[in-house]
Length: 326
Image 1 (cartoon, helix red, strand yellow):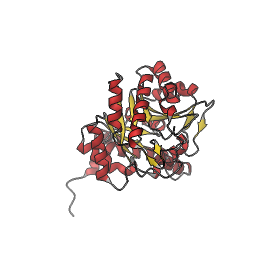
Image 2 (tube, rainbow, N blue to C red):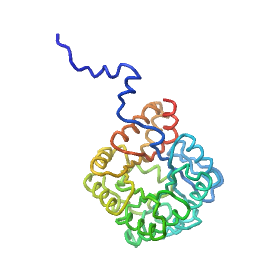
Image 3 (cartoon, rainbow, N blue to C red):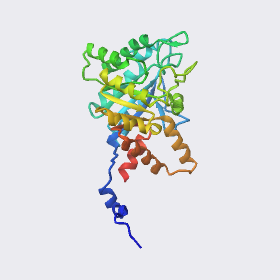
Image 4 (tube, helix red, strand yellow):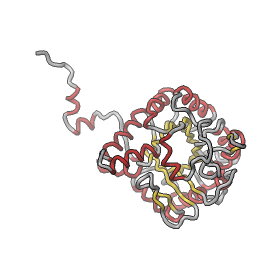
């Protein structure tokens, strides 16, 4: 009988040995926690399709950010739900808008202890629910750029560290970078949702943020999930326009694109583990079909293994607790 000369199981014989040779690391420092804040809200509202996720009143934002900070998570991404919407999304760039107030309050209370990121998009603020300004039934790309730039500047005035355009308008990074620089906000960074795919995994987010399109769909501006080369062109375009961090979104079904982005480009790479990924795990865990801790860690490690430097995820708080216990 012949015996194998290489026994890889020797490297798995104990927990300490496995720890010693572990190739991919994950910690709360790798996570960015989304936060939903709603204008004129008095008490927290649970998001039915996303267990344990809530819309917050402005008065609760400090407590929430404090809890996130205590878990060792270094960054949040703020999403706003306004009390009024119109066809121009004017509340999105109002200096007294809900996101701007939240940013200002967080900055005042936490200083540099938390990296404040904010979504730059129009879907939550327009009466159409689209990510850009519409002319008839068509998205007006170039008009939308002016509005996105105004949103970014208003957030910078409030004290944001990083603006995160997610509208997928052509030229959005260049327009935002120019506007920020002209206004003197040269230190405000841009983390673009560079390859944001047209995906059914966003459905629970649209419930949370009240931003489902009122007509049509987003196929004309979000990347088809069939087109890997097109996704890489989107990433490359953002880099040429001056982006600081690129992002692939969603994450779990797009690990190949995270890996390809990491291979091709020498910028920080973010991945967004989106609402549908979260909801699927939470739903299965509630039925007892999966172990929530084990599958959450496996998903997040796979995203890091693919090459992401940071992960925006609704698992952030629960994962940070898991990781502190392990």
